[in-house]
Amino acid sequence: MNKLIITFVALMGTVAGVALAADAKAGGEVFNKSCKGCHGPEGATPNEAVSKMLGAPIPVLAAADFQASKTDADIKKAITDGKGKMPKVASVTGSSIDDVVAYVRSIKK
Image 1 (cartoon, rainbow, N blue to C red):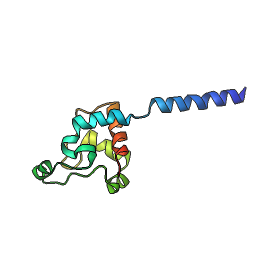
Image 2 (image 1 turned 90 degrees about the horizontal axis):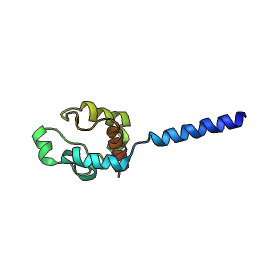
Image 3 (image 1 turned 180 degrees about the horizontal axis):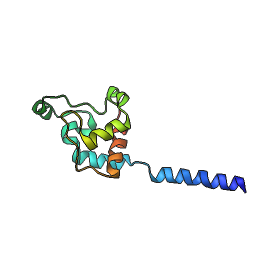
Image 4 (image 1 turned 30 degrees about the horizontal axis):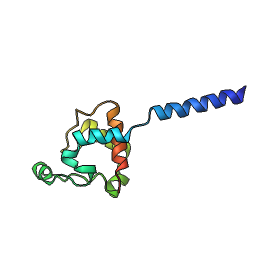
């Protein structure tokens, strides 16, 4: 009986984890609508005109140094609160935030 309970709990934990997992593909769609204008396609080529207008560099999200130096929480906070001259992205809310984080992690070089 104990093995059955343990198996059931482990299975439910796995199913819950999969159900709550972020969707990088959906995040890519959100990224293309809300982030690509500044960070460029696949986060690889920041928009120089926007960077110049802001007077601040726009990070290459796909770069290994960006990926290594930022946690998922850092990326999520930048989306929800803004960072430096980057304003919060009000159009990205709810589970879409986690989806965008998953997408950003998927584009690393």
